[in-house]
Amino acid sequence: MTDRPNTNRPVTEIGSGIYDLTLTREPARYRAFLFDWDVPTLIDCGPAESRDTLLERIDACGVAPERLILTHADHDHVGGFDAVVDRYDPTTWVPDQSRLGTDNDPDRRYGHEDQIGPFTAVHIPGHTEDNHALVAPEYDLAIMGDALIGADWRGLPAGYFVLVEGIYSDDLCAAERNAERLQEYAFDVGLVFHGSSVLADARVKLDAFLDFPNKGEWDD
Image 1 (tube, rainbow, N blue to C red):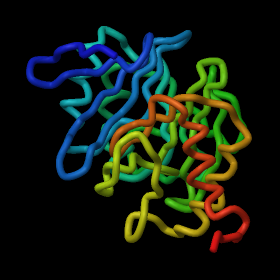
Image 2: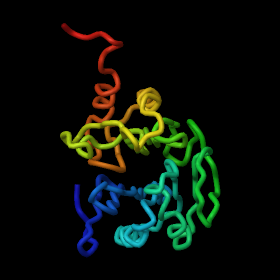
Image 3: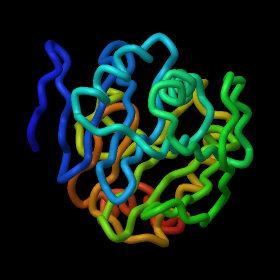
Image 4: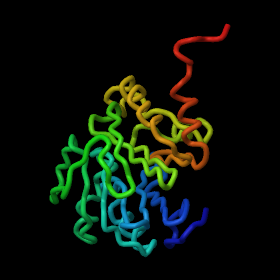
């Protein structure tokens, strides 16, 4: 893992051509992800108040996004949508259920199991009705949307997943139940938008989280 400096705001290169664009650190860690793969792709675009920071961080990577995918339409994922479209003119992909309220309309809509380049969309409603994860099996990687977040966002050790709890999710039970769809895919890295991403054994840790307790059986 290496840091690419942007004055006082580092851009983190997680892996080859995978950039973590962390936009704010407190009180919540808002971020976007930029992939310099076959088609340079930006995943989500932060809150509106961070749109200038987002553009600065994209420019610091030296990679102009040609594709923009939204995982869902919460304010902290869609706020920079118009700014990115106006500057880079990417092809935009937005979930079928999302209502944007942006100046620019999406180019394309997608749903469960649709393929967008190397990414397979996985619909995981619960946090919001339109929430999706994006799995890239070829790269052994999954982007969680807000199906799951980093455990350290809730004061637990980093390197694990928790659900987006309480007032932040529409239906917490549905969120946990639908997250099981991710168990149909293999991946080692799980990228999250809040808290720390899980950069090793992500699927193993997801299984441990979702499968506890094992079918309701408790040890004495």
